[in-house]
Image (cartoon, rainbow, N blue to C red; front, side, top):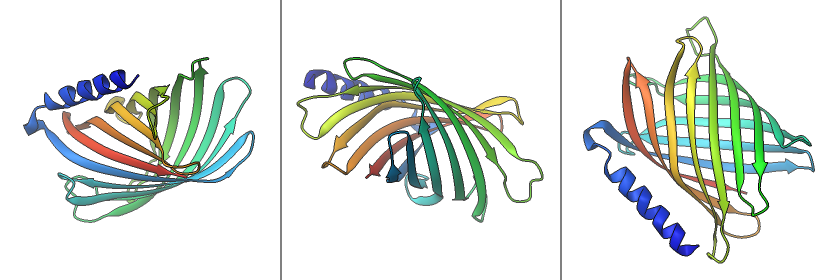
Length: 219
């Protein structure tokens, strides 16, 4: 298994090395996830996100989400999130803040060997300042999670892809490909995920690429 992990890391390095430098920015995304309350069926958790863009030099976004998840009996999770975003749009001088409602319908498949396949389907309702209508965005993410044994604190690897569809423009406006996310169990209560992402965003009818490094500390 350790050989497979090394090969996957090598594949990720080669993949990102072939990205044209003139087309990409480098970003850093930091997440903190707090499991505030959990029962057999319900989970209430809080997510804080901070982003740095322009070769990790510019603070560009802060997000705080309050999330309630419900696990049904038929391999399905239902979630509702209330989110507040404080961000600086591209080419804007000032930051803006706005609320967002998120509704999720997330089926999953669990295999006997511990492998997990999940499909996240999210509808976002976003109201931005000085815009009369509400943005409706659909996001779909497909993820495969592989458990690891005898690898020290490294306990799993995730690979996933997500696309964004805007109803107002009738276009796919963003794609995020995560060739590698490594999950570490620091202790019984604290976990750390490290990931790399290739992000494609449609702006002014042109696709722009960025290379994202990120972390998610959750407890």
